[in-house]
Length: 284
Image 1 (cartoon, helix red, strand yellow):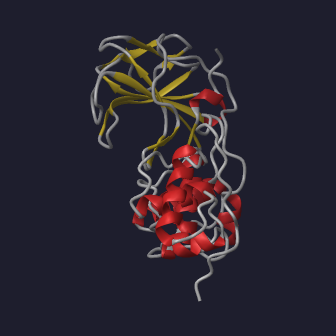
Image 2 (cartoon, rainbow, N blue to C red; image 1 turned 180 degrees about the vertical axis):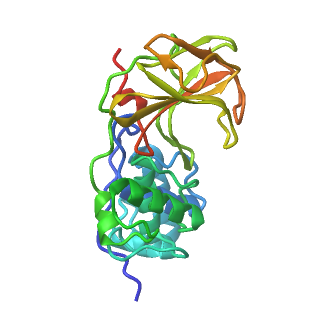
């Protein structure tokens, strides 16, 4: 018999998760389940806001359940295969689906290893993300999420160990975190094409050229303590591989190359392969 679990997901009215802290993986899994039922179209952010509560209430009314807006055992059971099993109750591998897989995807994303759409299905993209996380964590990278991997994903979200500065003298747009049913791995700076993009800190340019994965014209700088900063969608690159830079050095110009809907800088930080929230590094 499939185990749903007895965890009650209480829904309180709250704002979206901050840029420095993930929302609840269980609430994210609930949002995925409600989205699958056609009742929730907002961001999978793990935040128990009014939209999530209203979707739960609509679902409960449809199923003839007490309409209390709380996703207890009866509500989760009524969600069918999307309502369980609970995270940590089974080993997750290719081909599985359910609540725990959605929670896994959400945790992977916040730890810097997004796997595409957060949809509750353990496909090849999730398997690849699990492998990358396992390699980063120093455990056997077999792409199967057993107790050790699931436990590691309950740990603290990586933060930057160094301070950096804003690469563009403009306000920010989209931040690091959930966006729709996917995950945005950087910080966007909307700015006019041609705006100067500066190095966020001292380091060495380890990549300067065209990236085929969607970043377009891209510069990558290696900083102390293993931190790498990435400057994507540039209209023009102003440095070459091997160049030494300091904070404020011009590395390029804002553009919309690669997969971009308009001129902006996509600024990303990584450490050991994991994407980390740039706001944990920026001294303002």
